[in-house]
Image (cartoon, rainbow, N blue to C red; front, side, top):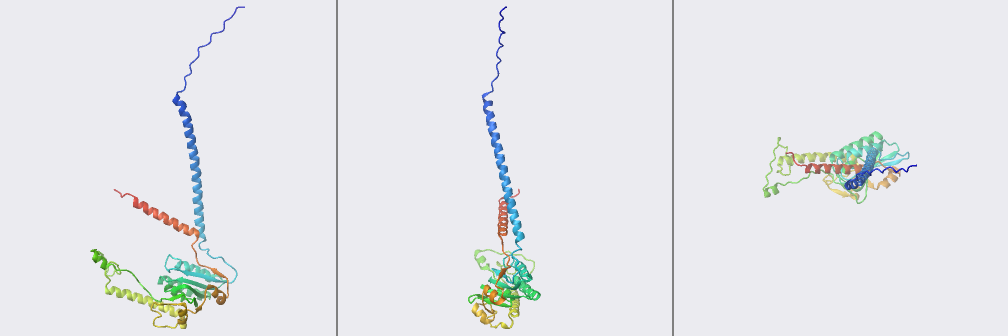
Length: 328
């Protein structure tokens, strides 16, 4: 048998090698892609987290606003209804007629409330707000046939006493401040300072008295007399309310309606108050319903947060508008 030689081996084919730069770029791209995906996942998680936080805040605020009117828990037991008059009596305050009237109506409507107690600690304020409260308390007393007692803590002056006069009886502490039955209108005049500084007031009005009480203009005698007559008229309204509310118990003196105020001991002697006592005493000994239920509307946490949040947004908007460049 003839020896056969093996077939010749084919020549090796040269496979082109990858460039060094391409070999280095592929792992870098993979790392960048992984980092990008990781960042996207983290960003998505944080976005969902913050959305849930804002949703929770919104639900909390809505619940707080909804629960604002439910400031009192009903009870089937006889009790003394409490409404507090605190601080300045003015619109948009805790002692505004809008807030207190809703509480007073709830207190009078509750059939288990034996009487309504006004716990007062206020230096006064708007005669309009005080007048609204006085008229409504008088109406509710006739409508529901319930007694109203005023309990003075630190101070019950001016508009606060205007409201207290609607009560059937007024109780004070011996050191309480009571009275100040008067009306005032205050302000400042800068005309002398402006003359010394060489500043001229340029005020144009359509109407002879449109600029009345302008602090940078002199006050004519005619306008002063008009303002004084208006104050005197409001003062007489105040006096009439006190006389109507206190009746024959009032021991009038020349100083009583002069704007002076007295301590509780003197107020009882003058008939501005009836006796000494605090809230617990009145509820226990006078109303005969020792349990006290507070009907006073309160600012809850959600409402305070809403106010601060709104103020922060408002200040931020104002700041942004100020920083905006003017249109050219």
